[in-house]
Image (cartoon, rainbow, N blue to C red):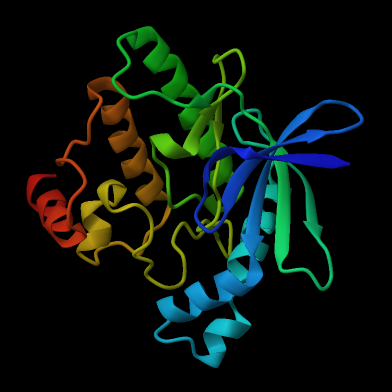
Length: 235
């Protein structure tokens, strides 16, 4: 039985809060991602343009997609999913995952050998995803956690990830302008790419820059439209 430590908020994913929970019998710690199904339906409906029936019917698709992807992968550089708790009649749905005590990866790391080690692991983890026909779509320092000994990275948050339809297809069927604005590629912003595996590779490059320099390559967070223009002009 999991005892959720509500005061220990670990952060937020794409569509849910993440909290620390402890197994009352074993004392093992887990990261539990909690979703409100009602809130997700409202939010998803608004994104689609005003809460239409289609948005409400497909509102839980993002959760199902994240669960399906995490069940498919087993890799040392990807956070583990242990269990999904969905009690009939309750609003909340829970994903019980591996707890990464090392926290988020730092930016502006002075030890370049450490940067090489972390980035090498990131390459291996992303290559594994692509080999398994998965595009992450939101690679950034916030979505890279560290093991308790801080020697191993763990890729997290598959809330907006996508599966390929065939082993020969590295692009999703429809163009997808999704992800964190500062980590989107120029090709994606100009419509020359529909957000395939190359979008993850670009985001990895931006992440590496952040790890080395401690800042974004195209300025700090601001209006998304201004940031888009800056990426297109300077990249």
